[in-house]
Image 1 (cartoon, rainbow, N blue to C red):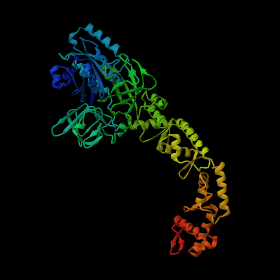
Image 2 (tube, helix red, strand yellow):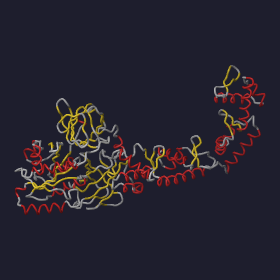
Image 3 (cartoon, one colour):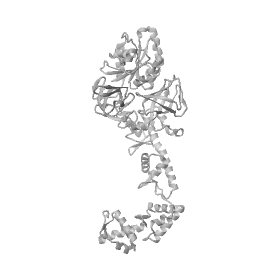
Image 4 (cartoon, rainbow, N blue to C red):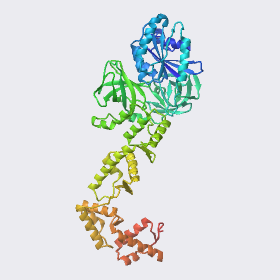
Length: 628
């Protein structure tokens, strides 16, 4: 199925053309039939000469209903721009043409209706005028067909051209990101709430679990229809109607979205949209910083505030990057097309492409961190991947650009090409750009050096200490530090990170405290002072104790005593020899061998029990479960 949208000024005959082509009057509302004017979207279907389904989305031409027109134009494959022979190119002809261009429509044809009301010379002049106005656009070179919806003249040629147009349009890809922007919502007896829209990005099947935006509820697809027929599965590009179970009818509203994403909370949490916008040359106003605007994407629309990236204004004919904070979050993917209008006066200002989702309006001093947005303007997949790495530094290879309107297979293929070209590398399933990592590694190294130079006695730094200094999120920092360890820039002992080749050192009062403690431990190897005796002398002594433990010069037994490691090793050696020879060890054995008092013997044996070297058996010790 291909979807063709009509476009054009009011009373130029769009609905009449669709009715003659399909036999269905797309104007269904009583008020539309009474007034002879399309107010809301209309839909009709036909089968072309190749046997392919063609869906028509008929849009209103009156300026008051441009919002409805945009809602219908967002999901079409091609546009049929209708110009009345007696009126020529009119204001809504221009506005509809620009809207379809900004929404990224790539194909179409031009129909001059009411050709029976003008002579050939006038029609020739009108064609020349149309050619001039559509120059350098998607309609440049498009076929212009003269018809009369009143008499039927030219309709055989029109049908032939529509068939040809359908053959030139590629089937839309199914890449597992199904979205159905709701353009109609109604109640049907026995089915409950029913919604319709043009399906994009993925398939929807009976029994499939889906999410509903903006209510964030989930439900199951009960029925699926396409082209008026019940089907098991609807494919991307098809006009689709579905009913759901587990969802209240009030939660299915026009402007909402049915999605196969399990969790849509990301779009609530990252509700500021970074946009590339093009202001129309004929726009009566400029976009100015902090101005309010109306953003229309899919069938959704919302007012919000705009902040311009690197200037105060974007004038008619200009373009630039801006941030948009909607009053209510919008569900969009990177790459989606949108239209910008003003709430007052109600005019179309421009449109463009969604570049990213962010959590908050950036401040002026933070804008340097968003320069990557300018890399995205051409919207190539390579540019998106590289700019994502500029933004994230390292990205999960299985999830990169998951919130972009691009196939994961295409993204994976581009990543593979970039790896072959040496522009990106993969470490532990994370993608990174070497040039960016070099900059970040230098900064991280400097941060770690500063922290360690201030505390040269430390064995290393915890992840949290580095995080506070660098500002990187923990999940990213772990991968960055792991990569730096692999590159021999850092070492890791236990949970502590250290510069490769760095040794610990003491200075000043901490060094004096260290020398005092070591001296007393040497003077009393088997009867060291209680550790609290040292710790009570102040912070320098406490730091010195930690240093002795970190450098393995000392060993803490229980919470009370600190032995020199050489002495502790001597104690362990004796215990092993005694258990190997006698099979048992008593408190008296330790007291006699080292002249220990009871206050040392008990903590020592409790520690060897904890280590598994010994195990208590009545009033003695035997080999523990880790003796070997």
